[in-house]
Amino acid sequence: MARQARTDDDGSVVGDVFGIVADRQSYKNLCYLILAAPLGMTYYTFVTMGLVIGALLSPVGVGLVVLFVTLLTVRLFAGFERWLATALLGVELEAEDGTDVASTRSRDRGIRARIESYLEAPSTWRGLGFLMVKFPLGVIAVVLLIPLLTALSLVTAPLQYPYAPELVTVNDEPITWSIETLPEAVLAVAVAVAIGVFLLHLSNAFAYVARQMATALLDDAGPEHGGGNSRPAASQSTP
Image (tube, rainbow, N blue to C red; front, top):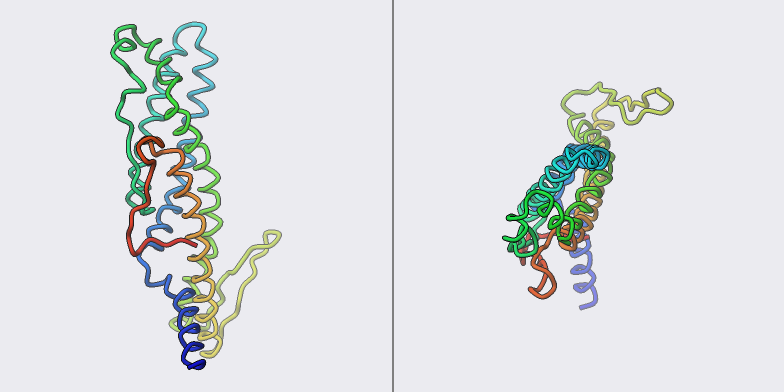
């Protein structure tokens, strides 16, 4: 009986470690992190320039238009991120009902009142906060992607040895691994699998953090509506 229990525990450990490879959610998480790099750079550049230029030009009136366009774009970007998190991170996020901004009175009063309504809306600043943290998340994604590409190149070692893949660069000098025999190629595959599994677990951990941030900052239902609820999908991975 004790031996059977130990076998079950071993099987569970193996499943926890390597089952991630067959989990579709793992690759959705990885796609989300890869997209975070270009999206984060785009958000950071546009929002920073829009807010700075709008603030500088606001005394002459043109800045108000720039600020309005920037805030409106922030809300559009936040809506896109809400959709992206729902599609790739396995979380259900609700959009606002529109009652907190752009009221009829503000529409009648013109662009200044519209800007004021956006400034007063909590969803605007929560969305802006998420867009700003998207940039460092994208940097992390790039750091994860580089060793992942190295692992993918090592997987093909049995098909192309002798082979000398570049592993890292230190002081502008590439560090390579010279693979000249079949046993070395097989070892390279084993190393690549270990690196790949580790990176998938790491990407799932960062995706979990991103999912929590998206729930906190992009779910416009509010606590009175129950907030953002994670989708009860069997494929959803948590670290």
